[in-house]
Image 1 (cartoon, rainbow, N blue to C red):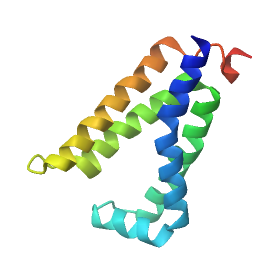
Image 2 (cartoon, one colour):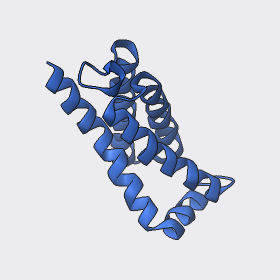
Image 3 (cartoon, rainbow, N blue to C red):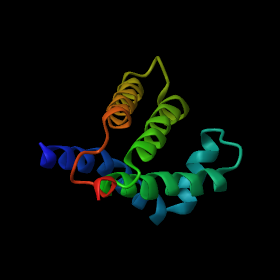
Length: 123
């Protein structure tokens, strides 16, 4: 079971780390997209995005302060669901909206039960 918990953290963190690295490689395009979404300070949103998607997700993967990082990532999933994906008339956007809500639920499981024995929290 310990390996399954580690595999779960890997699966849950991969999408954020991968996406964060992609955003880090294209700062102007990412900030332009944030401006298009109507975010008031795209540069600050960009910095926050990198901190959460790369930083918090990496800490979560390692199981360091897993409950805190899981709570941050759950909140991030809900915030991005409503900011970027909530378009009730668009089926594809709504699929992404509900995917984010589902992922938030998975992170809340970690908040409730912890990261498992194969985590830095257990050391």
